[in-house]
Image 1 (cartoon, rainbow, N blue to C red):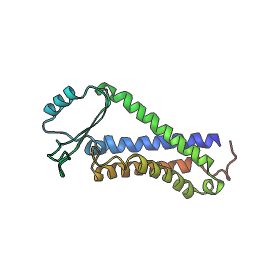
Image 2: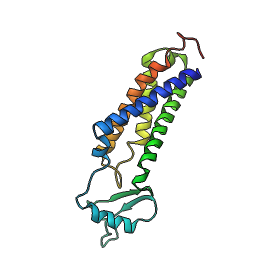
Image 3: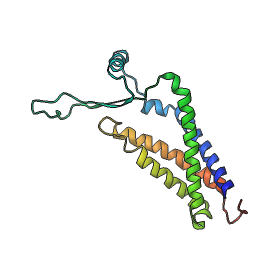
Image 4: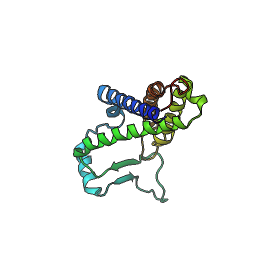
Length: 186
């Protein structure tokens, strides 16, 4: 069983990485959804650099009105600073790669814990892994919208992109895991 879990996990990690590479490097998904450019970027950068010296997530609210309330309809901005510069892009990509493989290995391990009813049919294995991916999208990507976060449509697009990656991974992982009833366990 350990061999099945490792094989499915590695195959899933490869599928998740391939989807991320094709979607981001090939089609620019992240650049269009998470890295938009400002016309006055230099001025905004200089203000943020002077004002934000500690890593963290910040909200920038409008001034309170005469009633000491936030005026309705005025924007609230979210600013995130991880405490690193562009030199961290390479190590950050390696960390993302490791996390994709760790997530796929954990999903394969959960599949290994599932009953034989799930494990013996390809489409049940696919459904099981896809549900794990859906759970991750619903709890990880979808809630990141609203005040200081992404617009709802952007959060939905990011979650849909991630769900697509898990659907692809589920197809590959279910195949790699195989049917334990047909092959001797290892």
